[in-house]
Length: 206
Picture 1 (tube, helix red, strand yellow):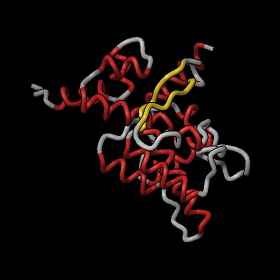
Picture 2 (tube, rainbow, N blue to C red):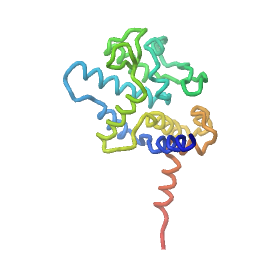
Picture 3 (tube, rainbow, N blue to C red):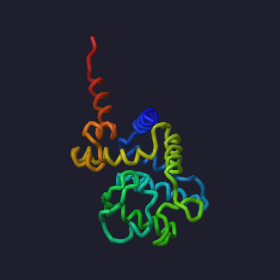
């Protein structure tokens, strides 16, 4: 059991956040389905919406897949989305910005979804996408970008990295992620390794 947990942690930390707008744009482009059929256009928009929703809320993918249309259309503008986390069972809030709300509303209209529908439906009628399916979607998009470090945690880590770089509020981010220490949070969003690389690059060896 301990060996399995250690393997899972290594897998999580191998997956990296996106570090720039260029990287975000590249992955969004890779998520597009290059086909003119209406079906594949809907798949592309769904996949991009999953990615944007994850990177702009910081929610775990297990909580994203269980959302229904009614969960995100109850208010007109930005709001706190209250959910019970699948992993911890705790009630938590995710802030839906005005920008994200506008994107979600356009997505729902394009997809022709009803209030009772899953927000991210599977191709199989009556089911929502699974965590494994979303991992594969993001992993494949990463490969198109020449990367092997993209997965579902990329969305959550990208959110955390942007939050920290713009606010430097590690305490709030630590609480949001429910981490036991600031060091774990910094490692999770890839900052520890970045700082180490920067320090090493500035060394003058003799």
